[in-house]
Image 1 (tube, protein in one colour):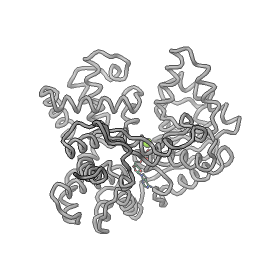
Image 2 (cartoon, helix red, strand yellow; image 1 turned 60 degrees about the vertical axis):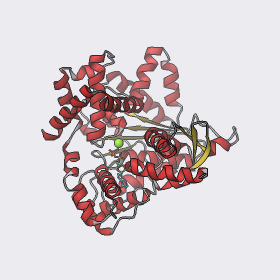
Image 3 (tube, protein in one colour; image 1 turned 180 degrees about the vertical axis):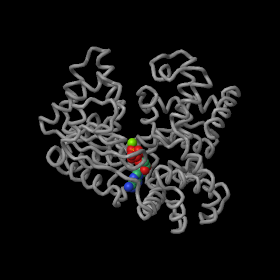
Image 4 (cartoon, helix red, strand yellow; image 1 turned 120 degrees about the vertical axis):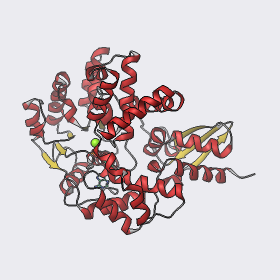
Length: 433
Ligand code: ADP
Ligand code: MG
């Protein structure tokens, strides 16, 4: 009978084939903590990796475990460090959840992002003193969120008892709204104002949220006056943030404003190589160069191209070569590049005859929920926007809501022929318009 290690190694092989986009080199460091009675408990090096696996890979692991063993298996991920740490040493409630890939080491520096990168390092070594606030801006996929995670991780490493809070703009807005609803505004305020570092991603979503802006303004002042670090990102410069209050904008400019530009060809080649390495892939130089030439604007597209190439190599059983890369991404990349969330929303609202404001509202009737979830699902599969960004476009929903919507629609796509047909038609409309 094969032993657990052998079974697990087989499971990992299947996972890699099933889900190349989420496969990482460090999967090889995962261990089996328990494998009995239909439960496979997998030990991860830390909280960040365990979170990553729960959010992105549970499905692939479950399927792989079931295919490999022929039994129904439930998969769980646990951070081993936390498991064995003494309770006094671990403060899970305070630790910020960061993405395991988004470290300074994994960030490739070039002329287009040098200032942003350097200022992030400076801030994480001496929060509240050098650049406050630090405001990063640039269009989608240029590494803003990546840098924020790196700042949080590095600050906590350098100053273990620093209280770092990292929120997407939607999370801030939602926490604020729910505090009002629950009558716990004071707790919310004192919580926000007690941090040593407040990091908020995508503040452009504050527009048209007057009350949240007001609240943010006061939080900002309180933190600033106490010399607490504030780090913000947006998709445009402070002055271009439409309909954001002037007094807020002028505060954004008090510290350092750093722009991220689209990376140069050399930087793109280095990024592709870095990403391939993270995934444990060997790719020839010529393939990295081909991808870098083919995909110019957005780094998420680079990663998408890598995924398609890897998946093609897996299904055809070929080695990754320039020829295979050309066949794999010749057409694909262009499709992914042209679709925007607005186009998806337009198509879906048209198709189901609903209004955008309904999709963004809290309404939960089936006639609204389904189109809303379909928007999320299509945005997830046709664009490379993050779960947070997709949620932001649909009324500030958080990433778990988007994740839930995606898996629900995926189920329907599989089991309900009517939904399946609708999805096919919508996809066609969106990608061909
Ligand atoms: P943004 O928040 O600006 O839209 P993200 O931080 O989400 O962009 O970055 C998109 C993807 O591109 C992420 O996977 C990130 O790791 C990657 N990326 C962006 N810039 C770099 C870089 N300079 N080096 C390595 N990876 C990068
Ligand atoms: Mg981002």
